[in-house]
Amino acid sequence: MVTRRDMREKRRLRSRRIRALLAGGLVLGVGAAATLAAWNDSEYGAATFTAGRFDIVGAADGATFSSHETTGTASTLSFQLPPTAMAPGTTTYALLSVKTANPSVAGTLQFTAGTPGGTGLAAHLTYGVRTIAGTACNATTYAAGTSVVTDGSALTAGGASTQAVSANGAAQVNYCIAVTLPTTALNAAQGLTMTQTWHIQGTSS
Figure 1 (cartoon, rainbow, N blue to C red):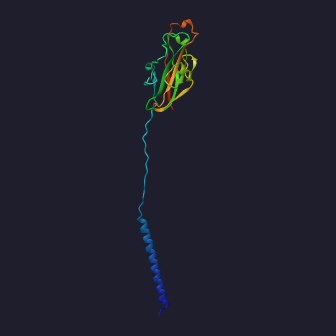
Figure 2 (figure 1 turned 180 degrees about the horizontal axis):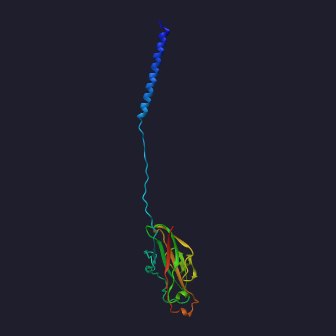
Figure 3 (figure 1 turned 180 degrees about the vertical axis):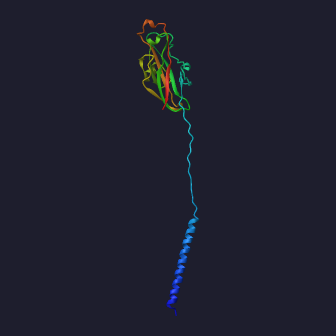
C-alpha cells in the first residue's frame, strides 16, 4: 500500500531529477555557445595615379608635325604667293596646323600675334585668319572658313575666340592666314620689309 509519505518522497525525487536535467541543459548550452567560431572577411582598394600631359605640335604643311615652343624655333610658313614682292591689292595665304601630341589631354587654342619686325611694312599690311576644313589654304577655302581674326586687322591683332583641340592628336585645327597689301597702300611702302611670328597658346581643358 502506497502511503502519503511514499508519494511525497517520489515527488521530491522527481523534482530533484528535473532540476538536475535543467542544470545540465544550461551547462550544455553554455558549452555549445563557447565553441562557435567567428568568421570574417576583408576587402581592399588601391590605385596608382599618374598625371596626364598637355602638349601641342604644329605643321606648316598640315602633315609634318613637330614642336615649336619658342620664337627661335618657329615653323616657317609657306605663303601661296612669295611675300617678297607684294604689290597693292595682293593677298597671300599660308597654312598653320596645330594638334595635340600623342599622348596628350584635350584643350583649347588661342591665336595671338607677336610684335612685327622689319623696316615698317607692317604698318601698311592687314591680315585675317580663318579655320578651314582641310589643309589647302587658298582664296577659295579661306572664304569658306570660320573667322578667327577679322579680315583687314592690323598685324598686331589676335583671335577673339578659342578653338577646341582633341586629345591624343585625334583631330587638328587648320588655320589659314591671309596677309594683304591693300590697294590704298602708299608709295612709302615700296621696298619695306616685315617679319611676324604668330603664337598659338594651348590650354588644357
